[in-house]
Image (cartoon, rainbow, N blue to C red; front, side, top):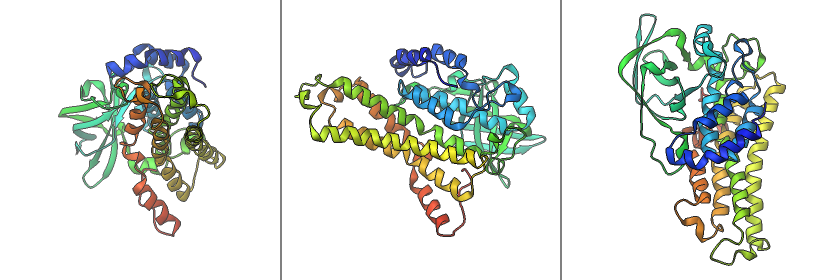
Length: 370
């Protein structure tokens, strides 16, 4: 599968509108649906493609080269169909009952959640932030901790929650990552939940071996890979800026410092891409069953992408000229978008570095979302 040129052109055409409206244009969503983007991880048994992660993320990068917000939000929405494929068959039937292009948002942070055991399921209430693309979805996956049982993800239909408009941010405005609120406890049946340890142990009911890959190995890439496309986008904008600054930009094409910055910025992004593709190809060669040490390493490497891309953007921003400081500068908008990605907990490498080093030194793994 590959996103069509028509869709990519639509992404470009609607990017400014999406940033202003703080949501992705419906025309873009529909075009991606027609391209099959949302069915990439849907199991074949429900009309999906059961595709590989590396193919999906190459598409996400292509979208991000036109607009990082679109790639971020709709990449997250589309990747959830992989998690649904790991859940109980009844949950899959409910979600994919209307077709393989299901659209589900999420917020996995359990801090604002209250979950209690009930007969046949759980009662859930609370507030969850950063639910990217939620305005386009009719389901949401919410994180919660059951006392004495541990962390689970709860699948909740749109009729059981409300969306609160909170997304006023310095970047990634188009993602529409608003809050999900459940004011009064709602019932979530057991089959609409996913245990953290089931995700960790790759428990599923599918026949395709791609679903043997632990769920977290897929998700941790969706919240940073778009930044690679954003750096590529920035390099295109930088090329177009030559001669547009109030300073002497005619020397840009030959200035040694600027040339060095361009090379380093591009290489940082391309190294991130190479590592991501190499990791997934290695997992595919291992029948999608990486070892714990490999999983720990892959999680750490994924967490470095945002920092690498911020470094690339800073290299370019420092020599982008005076026009880049004005509000509304497309280059500045990209600079902010990439920095916003770093705010996601999965893009803070500190804890993942400690865990990776500990495992390398013979210690026990302490992370169960990998």
